[in-house]
Length: 463
Image (cartoon, rainbow, N blue to C red; front, top):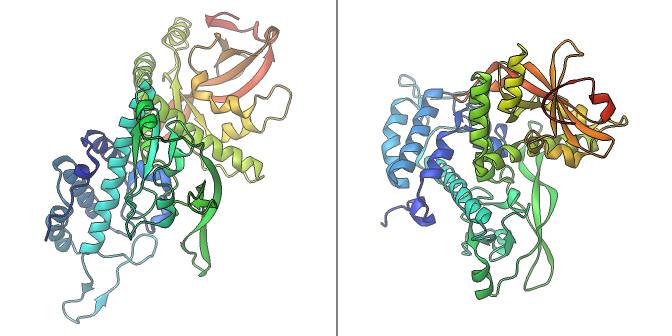
């Protein structure tokens, strides 16, 4: 029997970025695969219906070793099986005295799914495939940003096991910055073997390929059943394309839970970890660390993508008149060292140099109907607006001081971002769980007359 494949060899990518993606995850026990949804998998590793955290650690450790050492699927299963059997996570649990098959339940009351070679094979393939694709995405992003290979081509395996809709996208080319890749960068489902090839202008012309503009739409796909037995339908971003043979319009629908870009989500998580760590440092040091991290274009894009994902969900909820805040907080940048130094000279130095935005505040800013509210496109670029404002002002007219970051709007008007200093924020800890830290929170974005800003002290820049 031929040796089972090493996914890294098949993809042809050094695993360093894949390892970094996988090791950045925390651990989370879940009762059902739907509890950790789409991009959340970039932040946490889970095996559904597994009741013991030590067993989850064993599986995570086995996968990490497989990535680092290039172990095959067969190696992974052979080495991990005795440990899982010894800890009772294998086959069916049998009462040694009565011979009765014992049921085990997790914290949610659902029956545990025991280990088996088939299940370990699925765990190996899906986690390593996703990790390698996340690493491949980072590498291809660098080539696209440099202009060396600005086009990406979707490639399917095209054999009897390939989904027809995945095969329908085979060979199609989109620009690397086309939004279509936010939803269809592989894998796009369980056991999906698709990949992406980066192309230069010269290669595009040599192969006679024509880039397309992605056409996407939101559709619902089945994700199992609800407790009452009715279908559990979940939204995914599907891609519409024209079949080359029939000329008919077709839809490529990712499986439920797979309508996201693992590399993009991984960079977002990496950016969160960088800024979360910087938020705990003294203000000046945290600002320097955060800005150094954001100088890496990949980390910066990850932070922006993570924030924009939350912002678009907020906007969609407002459009449907169903805003449903989940209490999320995103660290999106840092105060400049000049602003922090100016505050310290006034005896008002903040505890943290990092700037964050809460989901509830974003809802407030997006629904601000009064004269002076900013538009959503401007709000989508909020992380960028923290960098190089026209001026930074100190507002002490309220109980808690705030920094006003001022941007151009017109000859007599300015846009202002109100950053409340030293606000208590609950954030994820890198190892899992949450903690409370002091951060600086954006809670208002308005257009105001210049004359209304002149009463505030100038910390940096000029009106």
